[in-house]
Image 1: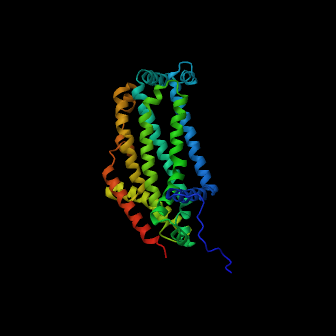
Image 2: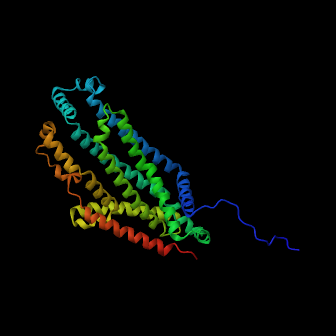
Image 3: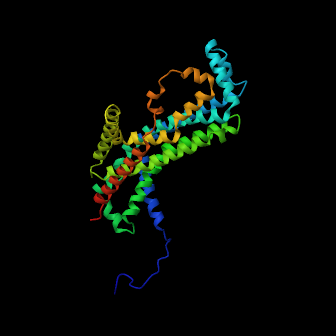
Length: 331
C-alpha cells in the first residue's frame, strides 16, 4: 500500500504573479539594508537635512510677512546690511515669480547635491547584500530553481537599491518642498517653486537609477562581501581625484568620475548660472554686490558638459550590465 496519495489534487492556494516575486526580492533587499544601524543613521541624517531645508524655506516665506521675526532681526543689523536686506525683501515681495523660483532653485540644487553624498555612503553600506552575498552563498541556484528569470532577479535587486535611495534622497527632498509650501504665507509659493521640485525629482530619479545599476555591477564582481564595499569606495575616491586632475589637464578625464557626471546633469537641470544672471539683471542689490566678481571661476556657474556626461553614464551602465550577465549565471 502506498504511503502517499498518488491521485491528482488541485492546488487551492493563492497564485502570486511574477511582479509579486520581483517585489519579494526587492522587499528582502530593503529589509536587509534597513537591518544595518549605520544605514539607518545615514537615512536619519538625510531627513535631518530635509528639516533644515524646510526651515530655510519657511524663513524665506517669512520675508513676505511684515510682523515676522525676520523683519525684527533686520532692524538690528548695521545700516549697510539693513539697506541690502530691505532692498532684497522689497524685491521678493514685488516679484515672487522670479525670486521664489530662483531662490528655491539654488536651495534644491545644493540640498540635492549634499544628499547625493549621503546616498553614496548608503550604497557603500548596502552593496555587500546586493549580489555578492547571493553569489557566495549560492543563493542564485535557489532563485534559478524557481520561476524567476535572471531579468526578474536583476529587476528585484535594482528596486531594492532604488527603494533605499528613494527613502534617503527623493522622499526627504519632496517632503521639504511640501512642508515649505504648507508653511508659506501664500499659496503662490507652491506654484512658483514647482519647477524646483520637478528638477529635483528628475535629477534624483535618474541618479538613483544610474547608481543602482552601477552598484549591482560592482557587487557582482566579487563573491567576497567586503571586496564589493572596497571596490565601490576606491572607485568613488579615485573618480573624484581624476576629476580634479582633469580640471587642470584634459577635460575628458573628469568623466571617469560618476560623481562628476551626475553633477553635470544637476547643472543642466537647475541651471544656476542662468538663475544668477536673472537675479543680477532684476535685483539691483544683487547686481551691485556681484559686479566685478569672477563668478565664472566657480564650477557651479560654468557651462555643464552634459553630452559627455550622459555618454559616459551610458558606457558605465553598459559595462555594469555586461558584468551582471557574465557573473550571475545559474550553475
